[in-house]
Image 1 (tube, rainbow, N blue to C red):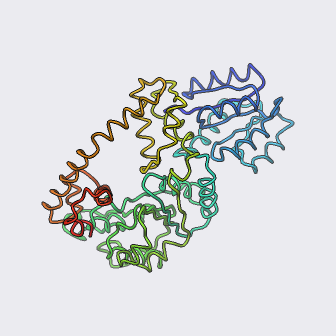
Image 2: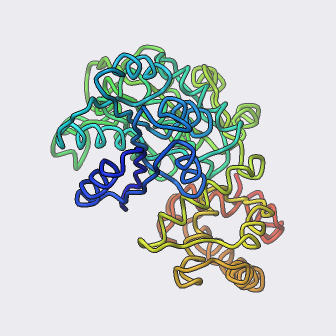
Length: 433
């Protein structure tokens, strides 16, 4: 997917030259002749980078930078300066400019600065709400420390994006960020996956294997869906957090490790502690700095920004727009699947609209199809899940493998069907334990 770059300069020849140069390099370039027109462009689409001259009429580059920092805090801005304005540019870097380029500049200088700026913005967090702005402010504050962070929130709200944001803004960004999905790995494999093993540690251990903690040394390890971790393994993780060392499977000696730990969960971890399903001492070790990411239904002002971003992502390079009625329809939805569900809807709507204008009928047709078949499809799926669990004697890991799902997906499906009453009451305790 091409990156969108907005170039602002009151010099026509400079604007055209930059557009031609950047277009040949593979970027999609939009132009504006002053800051006011740039603000209008930014309101219409999602940009990955802004390159602006400093000296311009109506609204200069520094004033534009301040506006962008307020409305779009994560959008990188590169200032282009003349000889007499270098000091001004250096001072506003403290206000949030990514970098500045001094005129005259070479193509190599321009391209390398752009590459760094867009690289910082990969895996972007799209938002307009104060709620997410507050989340990012907390994340930025904790990033420079090494304390353990617990990111809480429903599936699809962007917990991994927040975790990556913490890593990128820490003192460890050049070192590895290693995500581990605790729900997707069988319990008997998670230990060796986390801590590694020595050659000959067990049958089939033909060579030394580095664990995720070793790989993340001097970087960050993300323990995604930590509440799915086996109770026995929780004790070993507690030791890692306390002693800053791991026990490699088959090794006689512990190994010191320096990995910053971030954990996430979409479950009520306090309730799990109260029920004895999660270690209380581990919870307190993880909960040093909790960050709660609110669901999309509580921050609907983010929906237009997300829709614009997903339209560009799934439009296959075509100029897809959305009608006012369709947008209102999206704004009224509660989005139980959060941003992930919204993205799926936009991806399908792009196809239904033939990559043109997404209309209300495109969304209503899809919703009608989903609603009319939801009961029968859910019942069929629940029956398949129940049959698989019975075949595997209640082992959810084996059942998930048989069904081609992750353990986490299977657990969420069972909970969903229990809440909606599709799961038979007689099976409730047996399969939810």
